[in-house]
Each structure stands twice: as structure tokens, then as C-alpha cells.
Length: 267
Length: 78
Length: 264
Image (cartoon, rainbow over all chains, first blue to last red):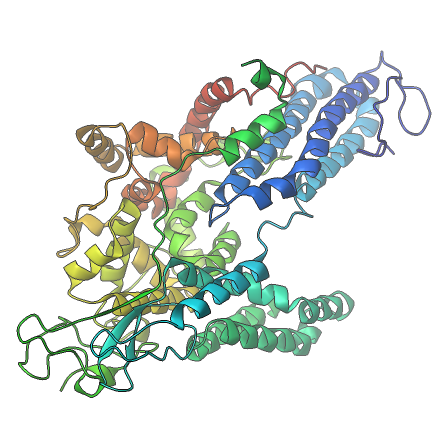
């Protein structure tokens, strides 16, 4: 079968990987040649993307990684153009021109090509680490801890004890004069709220994999225990990353379990 | 520019994305402030609650505090 | 479509209002042949709003609410204000922040301090994330779109204007047009899609060309987005506009015709 990106060099001869020559006079043959040219174009793009995608993610200093996402969106759109060209050519040029007998070969060939191209597109950025969440978290915590070591009560001047990580503005009581100081942890600390879930998930990959394995083996219903182990680990991490949110995280746990229940209900 | 002409599509997209101008994101630093009553100058003490001045009664907040995360309904001044 | 809404939601709640609209507009997968999507198959339902009713009924039977069936029961624990900040306050505030107002401005107008707002934000977001009926997020979306009617926040003007060469009166005119002209709203959604597909930052394009933020644009459209018959009705128009903008942007940016030279 024709495999996409199976070779590293461009093929100049009109033959597929199986070795048999393509009949460039038949509709099927012409279509194969056409798809191969699309492959080559897609391959060129994919090669460049694979070389530079991680560099772009690393070079993107935007806190929401918008530059990387902009690049990614544009590349996916290029692939989409390729896929759509194949699709419209198939509909408007190939099907009307092909005989019934030819379609028996052409249809599955195209379906296979299309599936492989879509998969290639979906996997283009697979190996790219968009954000190094642990690193971001660690940097933010270091900066935070350095900053809070040096705050003083705005009323009496005594050292303020900021006892833990606060990701929101809050009131800190001065131990000496009891005045409430409003403490603002700054934008970077606030951002932690936005990365708590993916960060916690990254830390619980092991438990998640165990759950996935059990699910593949015995189905979702029978993997409830593994799911709960994963979920509990996830909640523990979330509590560590965002202190003071235990109640909120319990609600999240309840909701995740409810979703799980709903998904194993027979329809 | 001659340079731009020789850049491939992927390289151009990369350049464009990394050089994209955007609205500047506000970066607030870590800081502390204190609220002194504008009428009598007193600070707010923990035991007196957050909503009113314990000394002159001036109202600081127009709302009732509920049980949130660090702030609770106990923080309403009496 | 709904599952995608749910998945997106758990990840980033405060962008939900924007994402909900974007997701609802993403109706095509690459690789689908043109015969998979045939708008001609369901014409009459749209005009009578039956499509919306059918969707609402289906959603309700699955225990899920849509914007139209969302209710505001005064006894609903999920609707209890947080430090006096109601869901309407929070939604309007979020909308205003999207417009460029500072959080301090919002706090001042609501008569609260920053810690209250921060806690309200966290708690409202968490409640929305964990509400499996989706009632709360639909209530939120409604108020997000009605921000300018909020008694305390409606008339707030950003103390820091966005940087654009578009004149304020032109930006206002664009905003008014988006509010009243649904074709224009869907055209701009199409423009955004086409921009991103051509490597252009759509949000910045909005600022540079309309003088508006994404949040402002999406705020004008919540009323269209609560009606699936409108979305379905406008699908073709949006697709047509997307192709027009795609032509334009791809020429501008050299991102079109990646395989124009390859022919059968």
C-alpha cells in the first residue's frame, strides 16, 4: 500500500512503493500521481515544521503562547488546504471520469490516503512541548518566595508573615498591630490558577496510563477503581499547587466522577 | 527585501508569529497596601472586620462578605 | 459539538464565552468530503426555530441546559452571590475587563476591594466548571452579552484605551453595527477564522481594523449564539464570507495556493 512519508527522498519515477509501475493513462494512475505530488508538498512543510516547532514554542515569550498557537494554526490550515484539494479533485474530477470497476480500487485508496494525511496533520505538533509547566511553576514560586520574604506592615512596620502561596489578593494580619494589610501576589502568581489542571495532569501521568491500560483491557466500567486512583492523585496535586482550594477541588472531584458515571451508562 | 523572498512559507509564518505585535499584557508586581479610614485615619484590625471602621463606623465596603476562600462571613464587621 | 464545548470548558473557564461561540462555529473537519455536509437537507426547520426547540428538548432530556432553557431559581445554591458579587456582576465585570477596563475600576464601581473580586472570580469559575447541567454558564453568558445594561458597570470606560489608529467614533459605530446587524457579526467571525488560518493574529486584526477587542465583538453576539437556528441559518453565509476573507488574507500574506500548481 502507498505509505505517506515512507521515504526520505523525493521519488522521480512514476512508481508506487510496491514497485509496480503506475499506469499514467488511467484515471487511477493519474490520481495516484496527483496524490503523490500533494504528499511531497506536505512532506516539505512537515519537515520544516518538525525542525522548528519546538524552537518557536521555546522562543515565544507570550504568557499565553499566542505566537506559537498562531504558527500552529497557520500550518494546520496549510495542511487543510492540501486535504481539501484532494477531496474536491476526487469529487469533481475523479469520480465522474472513472468507470465503475476503477472506483473499486480508487475509493479505498483515496480513503486510506485521506486518513493518513489527517493523521499526519494531527501528529505534526505531537512531540512539541508547548509550555514547560513545571519550569514556569518553579520560576513563579521562586520569585514569589523571594518577594514575600521582604514585606512589612504598612501601619506599624513590623515584618509581615505571608505564610503560604496566595494566588489571589488577600488580607494578611500583622501579628503585632493586628492591622489588615491587603496583599496582592502579582500577575505571575495569578497565572498559576490557569495552569493548575494541566500541571497536575502532567504529574499524574503514571496513574492515568494505568487507567488507560485497564480501560483498553477490560472496558471503562471495570476500570473505575483505576480512574479513582488517578482522580485522587490529581486532586492531591491540585491541592498542593493551589493551597486553600480543597473544598473547590472536592466539587471538581464530584463532577469528574459524575461525568465518569454518565459515560458508562448504556445508551 | 531580497531576504524575505528566499524565506520559505514555514519560515515566514514563524517570523510573523514571533514578531507579532499585541496589546501589552499588564504585569502587576507583588505588593502590599493598607486601607486607612479616610475619615479618622484608623487602620482595619482583624477582629474588627473588613466592612466598617471600628472607630468611626465609616462603611468601607458596600457588600456583605460570604464564605469564600480566605475571606469568610466572619470578616463582616459587627 | 456539545462534547467539544464541555471539554474546552473544563480547561479555561474565563474564555468560555468566547470559546463557546468559536466551537459552535467549527462545523467542518478536514477530510470530510463536500457531500458529508449538505445544508440543503434541512432548510425548513431553521425558519421556524424548530431546530432550536429540538436541540433544547434533546439537551434537556440529557439533563443539560442551553441558553434558552437556563433558569435563575432564587434558591439555587450555585447562584448565591460571592461577597455580594452576583453572577450578573461577575459576567458584566469580565466583559468590561475584556473591553480594556482594569480590575480596580470594576472593584471601585461595585464597591468592593480586589480580594473580594479575586475570590468571586475563582468561585464563579469553579462553580461553572463543576455544574454538569450547564445552567450556570448559560446564565453567565447571557449577562456577559448584556454588560452594558449593568446598572453599575454598564457605562464604565476603560481608563487605558487600546492602542489603535481606529477613531473612537468609528469603533463605536462598528460595535453598534455588530449589535444590530447579524450578517455583519457572522462576517466578522468568518474574518477571524480566515485570519488565523492565514497566520494572522485575528485578535490584533480586530483591534487594527475595527478598533475593538475580541471580547467586545463576542459580547455583541451572545444573543445570536443562544439561538441555534440563527447559527444554522447563517452557516452558509459565514462560509461564503470566510472564503472571501481567505482570498484576501492569503494574497496579503502569501499563504494561499499552497498546492495551486498541482493538478490532476
